[in-house]
Amino acid sequence: MTRINESIICAGSGGQGVMLLGKFLANAGMTLGLNVTWFPSYGAEVRGGTAHSFIRISSSAIASPVVYLPGTAIIMNRPSLDKFENSLVPGGLLILNVSMCGQRPERDDIDIVEAPLTEEAVKLGNIKVANMIAAGIYAARKKIFDKELMVSIIEKMAGTRKELVPVNVKAIEKGMEIAGSQDGG
Amino acid sequence: MGNEACGEGAIQAGCRFYAGYPITPQNELTAYMSRRMEGVNGTFIQAESELSAINMVFGASVAGMRAMTSSSSPGISLKQEGISYLSGCELPAVIIDVMRGGPGLGNISPSQADYFQATKGGGHGDYHMIVFAPSSVQEMFDFTYKAFGCADKYRMPVMVLADGMLGQMMEPLEFDEDMKPPAVVSKPWALTGAENRDAQSIKSLRLGSGEASLERHNEKLQEKYRGIEKKETLVEMYRADDAEKVIVAYGSVGRIARSCVDSLREEGEKVGLVRPRTLWPFPHEDIRRLARGKVDFFVVEMSAGQMVDDVRLAVLDDDRVSFYGRMGGGIPEEKEIVRRLRDKG
Image 1 (cartoon, rainbow over the protein chains, first blue to last red):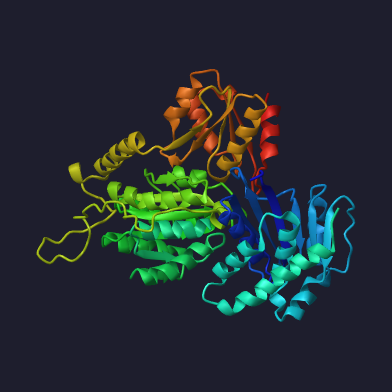
Image 2 (tube, chains in turn cyan, yellow):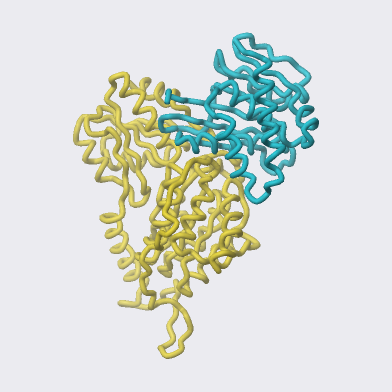
């Protein structure tokens, strides 16, 4: 396997599933036998405030779980774009939920995949799977996780709540489709 | 998650009594114990305050149980009276401190500013706790498990001193689900009811004279502590043998510093790491041995400089010990540590 060193920020507002999305990506990396860390950041004693999680996936030992210069930013709302757009490394990947972001990114040195993730999730029948559409986009761009692996992680994380699996799998598929239609540089 | 790893380590060690009061960034540990105790026929209590939690642990321990409480910095301050009493009464207990920024309520970011409180006696009297310093989720589990064995063996409170980064981060953890708890030592001192034996008591008030005097009791405690210093000190020496500069760091900073060592070595610089895995007892001897060579020491902490005092006591040459710290929840980056190390020449 080629050396992998992924650093990801998933950011949005409380309830958009940015913590769970991070856990999903870390779980997938762990299943491949890679070193992984997940670390949350959220406001204390606040409901619905901005939140983000840091994920590292690496072939070598991980020093700090905190990500300062992400290779990938998955951005679910406007305040998060303001906060993290400039920290992306040149050539990095920005996955942007335009449903919740009335603003275009300014960077022209990064790979941007823009899609109305919230609206797409509503079309799939569950607004909560917007985060998993983003996971599908990430997977299609980075080619570290294949669909089979992601489905197995969805099943594992859903546990006894099996009824949640199909819509999450559909969300992953939707994300992969969106990534394919916006071929990055 | 590190907090949950502590919880599972405690369960595997045979802890069957937990009392705590919520505080970020250790809430996942309290939540985990509330779920897990039910399945093992143990007792979980969300107490009405930190004071009652530590005193409930005192009560469970006095009856012979493996008992634990956990909190974060402000809550640990509230527990200090109880810790002093546990020490005076020679009662085993495990206390997890997931440190956050202070002083006062501070914030909920990771910090190492409670090193003095943990290692130099945050409560009153001449006492020590064994203080473990994990730097990974795996060590959160391993040290919590080990803490119960030490607490019983030496009849004393033992602390696992983590921080908000270790508590809330997730990374893989491996353990054997069929593992056995640390050997159970008999506890003839426990207050289990005086049926078929003489009544006995446990107390920390000692007004007697001679063998029963408080001074004699303190001498016995100190003998115990000297023995622990010889036997229980844990330290990781990483690429330190031929090093000209050695970073000394523990916990979260220890894992970041290890990465600095690797990247500096790749550039041909002879840099090593000393990572204390117990903060009390502190690895004075190991550092002193290194200091006999021409080695400079660079201490990095998430505090204004606390462990650095112990490093200075070991090196006994202040000119060779320098320090870099972040406070109030700041976490040093790898490249920041490398830059600061180079600035020191």
